[in-house]
Length: 89
Length: 366
Image 1 (cartoon, chains in turn brown, yellow):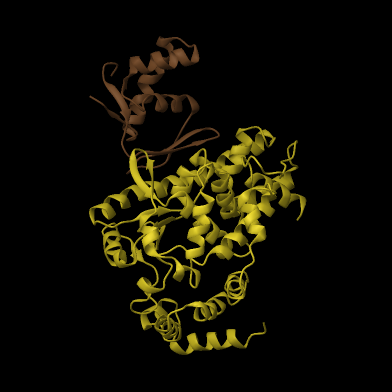
Image 2 (cartoon, rainbow over the protein chains, first blue to last red):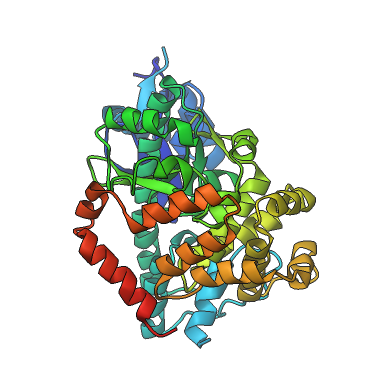
């Protein structure tokens, strides 16, 4: 998964809320992303691999790449499974 | 106005730089808070409450913050359901060659507010040229959407109707507008100006078209002045929001308003918005509104909307009085007196009960 590049799936509409980001895929249900998951959504406005996204988020938050990467693997799989992300390659 | 109303207005005015409506500097007690949240939902200004809390302008307790967050998620969930449908509708209407535009909710959220999450909405409003209403209805039927109430009489939609209501299979409402206001005001709006007025915006990369700023401002005025009575806070906020931007060309607004016989509507709506949100009375649009003196017929037409009883009857009378074309008046009167059977059936009325209702309205004390 770390070599694949990911991006937002087309036609996913979204809105910010006090507790994160609401997303609604074309054929799915509304999902609420936590602020940290919303940060990934922000990065994936353009295609990134998990490694690349982890680097960007590590620079933003001061956490280590490795720590973030482990979380992102699962998060990307979850969001892709819900039709919110798609492979860019 | 009560203290609770003051807070509600201050919430609905949050973010308007010139508003002097003040938010409280400590969390409200629970009874006042509960009443505020109920009113905020009813007035559809949940996004502005969430913004006031997020900005730290309205102090809240942790429990109150959770309640705002849930209410805002509910409201934005509705907005997203509708925007997802809007994107599907965009596909079928573009394929059918309909020259359509987005009105109100999504257009206002994306174009007029600094963050679309500040503006909630509960339905979709689309502007469609009158001659393209049939092809639009046919296209929406491909998505399973059906018209809710039949046409009053043959040809009424394209000549007189402000809008017609369509409902999709999940019960979401889509209003197809031929024009921006009910008669008599709507009959003075020229379709060519509406067709030419355009400003693009994007929803998740999909390019859509709204009206230009000045026509959006006029639509907000129509909505504020001729919509629900008593007037709701949300359309007044839309109006103030557009006016607070740098893009509004007041001279063009007033020029179009004059051609559309809408200056009284603009003056009335602006006066209400400025009074409600305690905005700067020295603003050019406010000074113009304060100085405008509507004619007798303008006052009569406005008064038909600003009452809580027998609005249809008074609107009909105002339309008959102010529509210049004799043939239009005759066709309109015939439609009002003898609506089609299908229309009456949809309202569970007979010709007799329709007439009785009209007679009762005429006989009722003024």
